[in-house]
Length: 468
Ligand SMILES: Cc1cc2nc3c(=O)[nH]c(=O)nc-3n(C[C@H](O)[C@H](O)[C@H](O)COP(=O)(O)OP(=O)(O)OC[C@H]3O[C@@H](n4cnc5c(N)ncnc54)[C@H](O)[C@@H]3O)c2cc1C
Figure 1: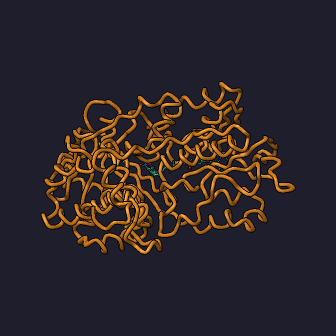
Figure 2: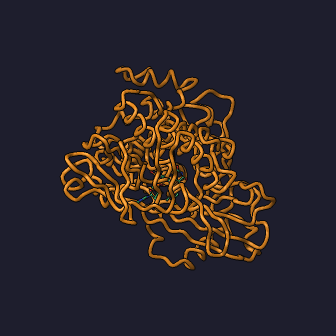
Figure 3: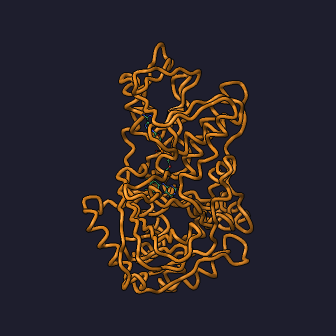
């Protein structure tokens, strides 16, 4: 297994559970890949960026449980929104059956007019009837922006509702999101099931979620090797015959899994394989989008809520890390800005100044507080961009080389680039290996089932009858 991110770890643990002896090689001195935590030069241990899971992420939940980390995730069912004028709203499920469980809270959503809320409600019902599929489009990879315009959404409802959810979930602007992904997010997280929208946040730094991985792999005689950068794969007569390590040493195995980011795959394969096999060559067509994380430490408590979703500002989410880690007060905040293209050329100080100015409106307690220290983490290639039609370039976990498999959030999983997508990619690679080894077994966990009226409405929507 080459790569110790979520895809590599989940695949390795699932294969070890199925009796395989797995050797996992990770370039860095810690596990977790893009969802990792590490020490800053000043001594603080920080997450690469705040990572959020949702109730609908069934495979990530399964992985955390397998490695004994399930209890390290706290689920929150009260989502708090704040706008730049300081107005607040709460989204929390009512006893109504899905898809109406969030309707009473949404009816009180103060940031939009009644007409806009009604139009959003109608668009949401179209999503329910289509079971999260774009049933009324021409099927030619429309963008989410096209879909919203087609369904009568105003600029304000896009900015103050649709974007708030989708830009963070998919790390891309609405014009560059395939409608397929946008609709699926609303169906799985907010409409099909009562538990799908619950927000899961780690109670510990991300790195501590992987503490049980080594033991799970070692139980079957396997091994996790850190600081082990792979230089390339050696291919002969249509099979991988060895992994060349940076030290010049070779590693051999019966089966090889590449669980590195998609752009790294091409550097590890021999040039003829990378260029001639379309599954690999197409990886060049996947574009990437950035995320900026800003860590701020204040001299006093500035926030009491565990997290806030911000409207109308560059800052999209504010996480109270002190509170999430179970410490009293709220001095350590982490701000997240997804699809942060505009901030890429900005200096660290300019980004900190922008965030501080926005926090004055969003969190008045920051006005008097002194900033003790700050760190800005810009991830230019945080995720692949879920552009219209991008699914075409995502390869299957099987490759044309019979003993080489792929795992990663960028492989064909049906999910966007998320931790859930990475674990699905890892589990699908494990399933493909088990099947090729003559011991097929289902590893991927099913989605949460459609509940309540969603089940019924979705069934009606799939019939070729226009009304039900
Ligand atoms: C800033 C940021 C915020 C995010 N926020 C969220 C969020 O809130 N929720 C969510 O669900 N997702 C989020 N994501 C996305 C999520 O982190 C990724 O989708 C997921 O972690 C990808 O896992 P992976 O295993 O596919 O890839 P990676 O995590 O990239 O793992 C690949 C691994 O391969 C290793 N590697 C690379 N080359 C070599 C080599 N030559 N030899 C050995 N090892 C090698 C790397 O060091 C790395 O550990 C975020 C991502 C970023 C960057």
